[in-house]
Length: 83
Image 1 (tube, rainbow, N blue to C red):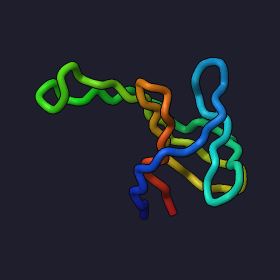
Image 2: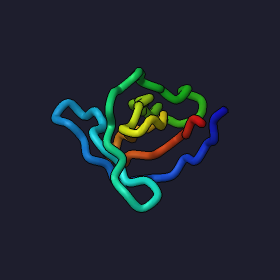
Image 3: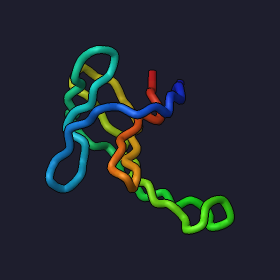
């Protein structure tokens, strides 16, 4: 089961842009592994010019799985949290 949050968070990124840690519920969550990553391009009919977002599914130390989105402006968002 998953829950959609879609809210901005503070994040620490590696040089290649992948998330290393993010602030969630009052503490830093360290990323143990990036399980998947992909680029999402909005359809041209929704936004002109289309925006690109880099999405990451990550496993954090302690066992939680999150989907994070990095926006073109550098903002990182928690999109989804998996139970």
